[in-house]
Image (cartoon, rainbow, N blue to C red; front, side, top):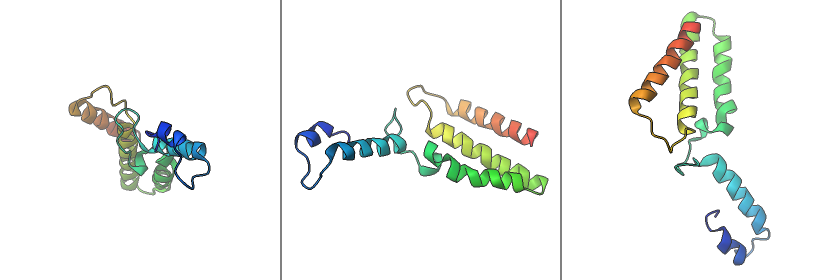
Length: 116
């Protein structure tokens, strides 16, 4: 809908009362769901709008952990969630090798588990 905005304004769809509102709503939804560089759909758990609903329970589980094993597990899950959020919202116009990504992930997880 956003891509065809000029045609929609010139020839609105029958029954569509407020074309401008519909276009702004489509822009808002596509801006939240599509990667700005690649145009790929970002999965819901890794969108910025999904950070609190998906990462919140992980943080609660980390705080509520009563054993070291559970704390380490939830710290790993938290770092993995953060890494995936960062991956899906990265600057896709500059390439990064898989080796660099895995090294960064390993360092992030290693330091989080060391601190925990």
